[in-house]
Image (cartoon, rainbow, N blue to C red; front, side):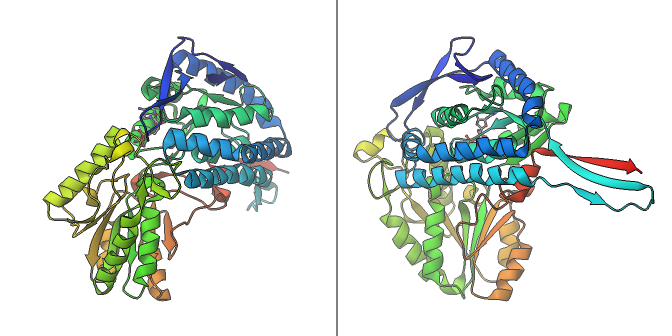
Amino acid sequence: MLYIDGAWKDARSGATFEVTDPATGRPIGQVADAGVEDVRDAIDAADRAFPAWAALTAYQRSEKLYAAYELLQERHEDLAKLMTSEQGKPIRAARTEVTYAASFLLWFAEEAKRVYGRTIPSSRADQRFMVMHQPVGVTAAITPWNYPVSMLTRKIGPALAAGCTVVLKPAEQTPLCAVEVVKILDEVGLPPGVVNLVPSLDPVPVGAELLRHPAVRKLTFTGSTEVGKLLMAQAAPTMKRVSMELGGHAPFIVYDDADPVRAATGAAMVKVLNTGQACICPNRLFVQRGIADRFVEALVGRIAKMQAGSGFTDGVQIGPLVDAAALDKVDRQVRDAVARGATVATGGARLTDGALAEGHFYAPTVLTGVTEDMVIYREETFGPVAPVIVFDDEDEVIARANDTDYGLASYVYTNDLARAWRTVEALRFGIVGVNDINPTAAAAPFGGVKESGLGREGGEEGILEYLDTKLVGFAV
Ligand code: ADP
């Protein structure tokens, strides 16, 4: 079903599309397939709802977000199970994601009340300056399949807190999770039109309408860099605000003073986060020569033990990849690396034993001897493959780490404070984890530089993406 102007409805065309479980390839549900006219209805509803929603007090908007936070927590287990069926991640990871998703509603329920302005001294005795923030307006949110609940709350939370209204187009692979999130928002009594949901099998015409329509004043997008660039170009003629959370190619630097086993444990965990399908997954593991053998041994030990399968099976850490194209991409990168001289230390092939043949499973893999001429050295993998590169000194590794068009997450393992500090400053990335593989939280600004995107989600920065700044010059 579509959710437009506070009502659940079919698409005007009556079209629907099927959603499948990536672990089994079996259908698990149907949703309405929005067309351009439905999107226009949704934008009109959001536009009509905007003035009254923006005029509520921050406290009133905050109350709705608190209520949504509580209801999301109540439905925690049901949502986690749905996510595992629809997206494939192991149930424990799905539970973690629901908790993470809820944390954005809570954080922005609080931040709603902290949209402070400021006054600025003037050089004129008869003048005062005041800076105030006001909601941008109707916001289009286009979200990905890999985090099908938290990427929604990370956008809807701050948008609603700021006083914006939203038209949400979720990924075609995971619309069922989006329906459940919107049901929660409906049940807490958001006024009609404040949030609208338009799932669509073909994102192209729906995206084009969201970006063409002059009433939409802001696009918030998480997805690939390729699509991000396309959408930014489409946003240009009407000069919409954009925030873009795009691809990454995270370096994971391990200096020789670090504990190789601890670093390898961290690397293994963050590499298989969501089966490698996260934009903060390391895509190049740089290890200093002196500890390279011990690091690789520990890494292979961890990765080789990981069990693949249905996310509902106990102990499974590796879920299916999202679709056949994702599997092909991973396979192609590994074959290319091997053809150019890399060694498969573990894994290196699709998994097809028994029930695994029904899904898109790839063995958790470690490649050693990875070099700059290999596709995997530059292209985001989005799969459970850890490419290891040996380096000799600090300047070299920083230059190599920065030698990418991406700039989202990066990681460094060292016990040398000065070296850590120098590396943090030199890395051209939006996020650096120092001996830390989870540098993310609702309270912290998440986002990238270069072709990893624009803007920040979470933190005190997160709400600013949905606010315009107004300057008032006041003669007294
Ligand atoms: P991924 O490669 O991770 O699937 P995409 O960038 O293709 O990432 O998809 C992220 C989101 O962008 C999804 O909701 C998808 O439907 C949407 N999308 C993809 N192509 C377009 C497009 N041309 N216009 C609007 N949205 C798009």
